[in-house]
Length: 219
Image 1 (tube, one colour):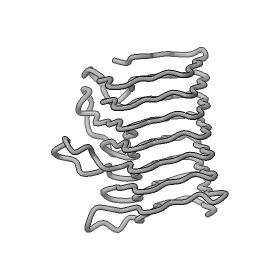
Image 2 (cartoon, one colour):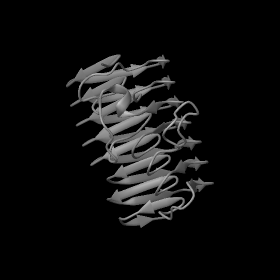
Image 3 (cartoon, one colour):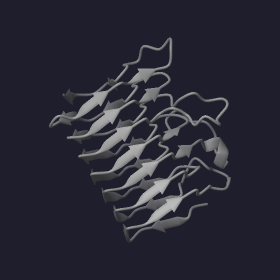
Image 4 (tube, one colour):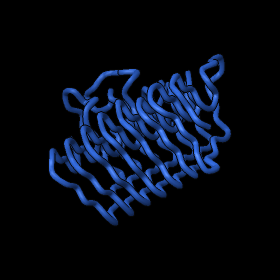
């Protein structure tokens, strides 16, 4: 179930707030989010999404433009919403699939998930972030008993082009690989004084403490 679900058309969302929203379990719970959008042109700005359980936003087959969003304390475990563990799934704040996302000036704090991408998981999608901030993402919430941190990409896990421009990434945690960034295909570019600081992996893992990328990059 979702608070807002849209298939096709255009989504314009501005000056909104979604807090303390819990997705109820349904069969196939790996799909979806509190805001669940497919095949849509979406513009979202000046909006806060905090303390959602079951992922804050999901965009499939969409073109997404965002500005000045705040994502705080969002958590996603597919087992909580009727799904099953999938190491390629994830994104406590945002999930993208076959989409293009361009953002300016948004903040992601203390988001995490089971799988890949504590704050953002992008599958076969391109991600462009200007003047963004990602801090303290990846650690599981204290009340979660069986997960310490997202597996890969404490802040972002991207399968596609990833460009971070004048963006700050700090204090990210992953269990296995890519304490801050996990990137598997397409261009990886860190431009204009983008900083990736104070990343960590859980003890015993050697998968790229700050950035783990298997694709081309410019840093």
